[in-house]
Image (cartoon, rainbow, N blue to C red; front, side):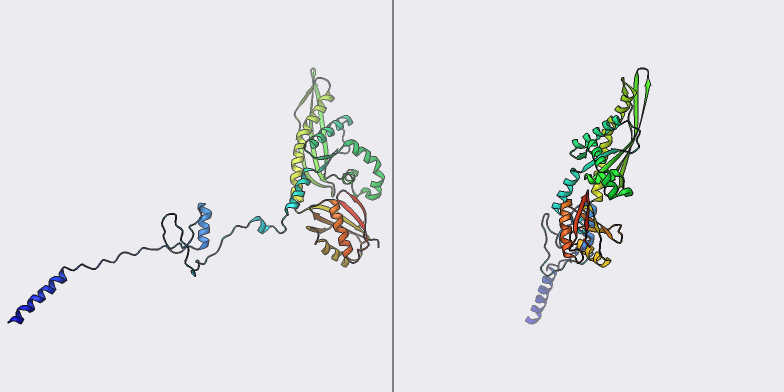
Length: 356
């Protein structure tokens, strides 16, 4: 009887305990993690938004301002890398600081020769006034000039030498521009007009101004201009001269700007010098010389040549005497050119003879 009484009581107690126990916690929703971004995508977002992407493990959220570092041994996700080329990466032969300094100084101290076009009908007194004004404008900007009187003297003194050296292969103006060391020669063509109304005289002028490289007579650029109307109470010639002189100042500003920009582009790999070698040996020796020249100059080009004469163009950031020194060293080291000697310099042209 006692066993029967206690069994139901114990069973009831076990059932009550199971009903009052704490239920198991419900499963929490897992946070969805965004996929890892490739380096290409990160770079693209940076380029579009202008904001640098977050560094570290992109799959782990951190508090504001914190930076996560990937665990050791964990590799970054692979992806295409987008890079922007810098100038140093795309420049084949970068200009050194010393070369750049030389080039900037060269552009600031260029020498100009300004002349009137041959056959001009402008009176000599007006030609002199215009050229004096043009040269003064150049001098005020810090450039060197060849004065008209200096040109006239050399034209008489050098005419015989000009005919003997070059003959009809170039104009005497180009020859003198080379001889006198001009970097640019400027040729002015002007057509002035004048008229009278009552007691006043009026003048106008149309200009066509061309810039040339003295080494090759290659046209660098041109400027056309029509002057404003000038007034004089003295004479038509005075009104005409006023139109010419007042306009040339504005024209020369354009000449300075344009010629500087053109030469900056043309000589971006070095100043161009012409090297003429008389009585050259066979083509094999010339090929060896050309290869040796490349060791000293930024660029070497073959010019028009004949059986007994070879012409090169060498590009170098340095003056004529530096070029000459390099050439003489190269001649000494090149078979067939050991006895080469200097003949003369004219502008940016150097002439040698092999002595063969």
